[in-house]
Length: 164
Image 1: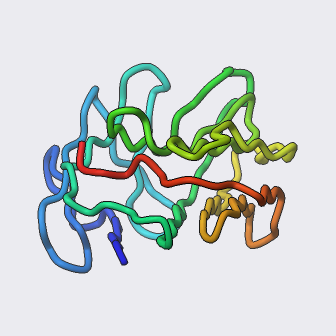
Image 2: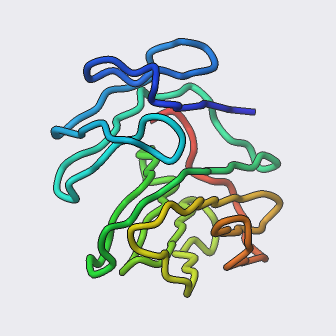
């Protein structure tokens, strides 16, 4: 199991630190700024080039493994076609969690029938929302504030989650 906790309260300068291990795991890029978050400190992105670049992991998923992404988001607009929240850039792309016009979208590369899984639920503007995306046993799910808003089953294959 791979787990990382980014409280962001332990960040200094352009470094991102795992709150559980104290280990430096990435950098802030593109002028990303710190702001008050849902709980403690958060990050604000300008929608142009700001990002958090996490260092590569040697962790690789196998057929029986699953993954979960959980984050708090505070959208200030819903008129932009794509806003990437999390992207695993293995070659080829393995996973992306994004907003498309303010609605959650989850991509799982490497599966035999890989495609975008989109929830038809608009995130409220200027409000903190918890967004969770999971994949296990051939089923992808998207949750918004604890409620299941999209489920896609029958997915098969192995995710592109090798070191890259």
